[in-house]
Image (cartoon, rainbow, N blue to C red; front, top):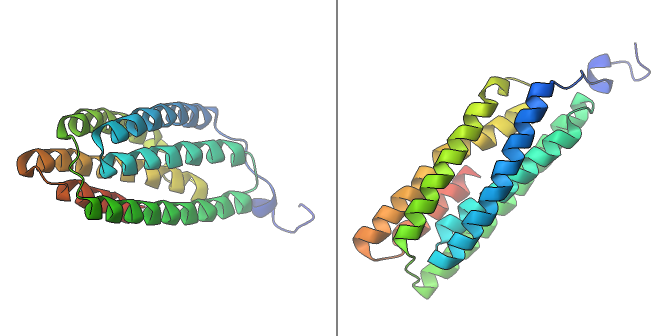
Length: 186
């Protein structure tokens, strides 16, 4: 028995190499999509694409942190999951502020860029969620990784719907509504 009196808190099981590889793939894909969506969000003037881009950045960070803490004791992995939750709250507040600015400025985004980029994002999000599905029942850290991945796969169709709504109405309201959906998922 260890000095602290609880092996499950002080010692970590060796990380599964398949899970580690899955996290590296998820990290690379999310970092790439952050760049793609960030450029597209400015090009299209879309707050929902920007929200999704920031979410991709947060997820890339999430996967990087998960890789870092993978060999640490479970208590540190669960504390890290809590810290990541607070970062997601910050992301939601950022999206709310940007949405308010877009609304007050009356910005109408470019729907075709929004649609094509969100289709690519959906493909990546579903692929990453499928890749991490097998690890969804792990500790708090693994569950937080899975929840972020699942929420992304559920949230990206909102951007696709916003693109269709902006195209149909020539108004920025659907873009802002989708950004608010993404903020609520955070």
